[in-house]
Length: 258
Ligand code: MF3
Ligand code: CO
Ligand code: CO
Image 1 (cartoon, rainbow, N blue to C red):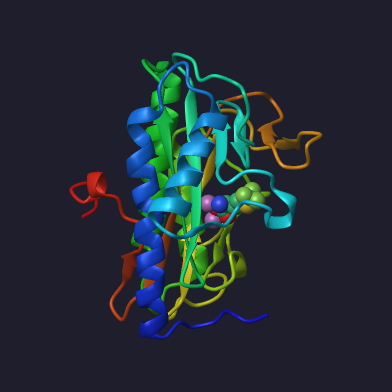
Image 2: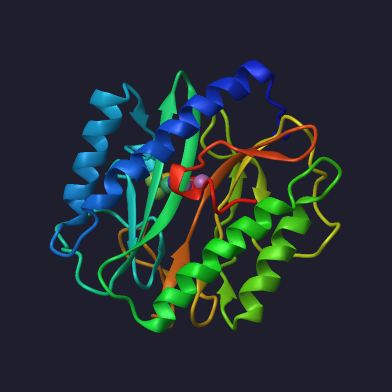
């Protein structure tokens, strides 16, 4: 399958789906507190997506995934399954939301810190968010996907963190995961050229320790092999004639992005 270019009508639909996904993260933020279970967070997001947004939570039953959101705590890299486990003081948690509205997907995630984090946890979360923004800044017609990966890898490694290799960003549209694979490491000037109308995610997973991962027996939960902390942030973007549009931008970020 090839990389598809979206028409402006399709991008308008992606914009709606992206805004809804961002809005779920805005809605759930105040509830991410010590004592709540990730299953409760899943239920609240599910109800909001289905009953308020009249949209579909894309993860539910996707390739057999059992829940509507992914919740990845501490050493979990990604695809954590909501459970009866309660959040506790000092946890860092990624919540990953994908909604389908009018056939199009919006996919975004952010880190939340429960109470007071360790200095390492705070640095990891911040550097990983910077990695996402540095990757995004590479996006413009005529640049290459390798430029995104190189910017992310450079920043993570400069801070003595490592980039997970087993998962990547992806093209997105009517299909949840479509070409290209958007690597979070690599070399400037390599990979496909970036062209207006492309829509894709950037979603770096950065570990405080070594880059290697281990899959748990549930077949979904990816954890760091060395049990070090891991963080991830994700946006869905559309390539414009001059650069990019972040389709999943949250209100809290509008000042942050320059
Ligand atoms: N939202 C994830 C991504 O960023 C994919 C989750 S698939 C699931 O691509 F099945 F685990 F939910
Ligand atoms: Co994604
Ligand atoms: Co996602």
